[in-house]
Every structure is written in C-alpha cells, then in structure tokens.
Amino acid sequence: MPTATPSTTLAQELALITSVLDLMTQEQQLLVSADTAGLDELTPRKAQVVVAMTALAQQRHACLAAAGFAADDGGMQAWVEGSGAADALAGWQALLDKTREAKELNRINGMLITRQLSHTQGLINAMRTPAGGGDAAVYGKSGQAAPGGPSKRYVVG
Image 1 (cartoon, rainbow, N blue to C red):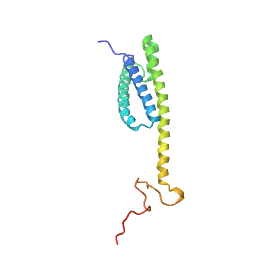
Image 2: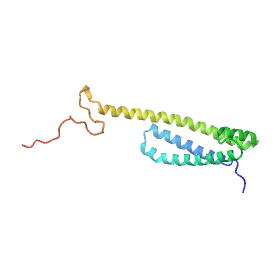
Image 3: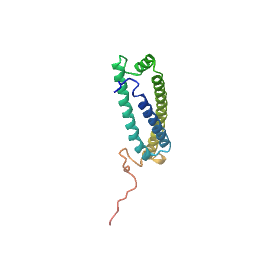
Image 4: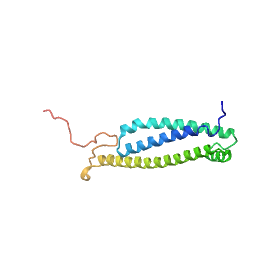
C-alpha cells in the first residue's frame, strides 16, 4: 500500500471543488429567480460536498504535519515546491484557482441573498405601515392582523 502524501487527496479535492462550483452556479440561478424550493433542495447537497472537502483537507493537513510542514495552505505550498513533483504542483495550483473561483461565486451569491432579504424586509415593513399615514397597520410584529381594523363581529339584535 503506497504511503499517503500531502498530494494524495488533490485529485479528489479538485473534483469536489468543481462540484461545489457547479452547485454554486445553480444556486445563483435559483437566487436570481427567487426559487426557494430549488434552494431548499440544493442546499443540503452543497453542504454534503463541503463536508467531504473538509475531510479531505484535514487528511492533507495531517500528511503535511507528519512530513514536518505547517498544516495549512502555506505548508502545502512549501511542500509542493520542495517535492519537485510537477503533478502535485499543478494539482495544487488548480485547486487554489478553483477555490478562488468558489470564493468569488460565494461573494456574489451572498450579495444576491442580501438583496433578496432587503427586498423581503421592505415588503414586511410596507405591510406593517399603514397606507395614508394613519395609525392602523395591516400586520403587527407577530405577523397577525393588527387590531383596529374593520370589525368582523356580528351584531345580533
């Protein structure tokens, strides 16, 4: 059985980060179209891939530590540069490039989420604020119809 090296997991990590990028692209489309059902379905899948990526990164960090390097990205950079393995360097650079791509997609998706939340909060505030500047709001803070609106009680007499 071959000994594990810090580059052992790179191919798997690259495949997973590519999957995350695909899922984040789908997430972006769902955010733009405000498809909450699609987001509900996609989010757990994305979380599973991220958990798998984290486990592989931890394995890589353990191999780095065992080889006497810092268990982080700087240690990996030092290891690949010192190893002389061109495939390890290429795999590491590809992983870093995809990670930067994912970071940018995440930033953009975060902006879309913030925009959607702001829009939703504006709608909620509009429903709480009475039209025409009166005192009667449509909905209170609890989400229930605010008191003071038209009475629906029947007068029996």
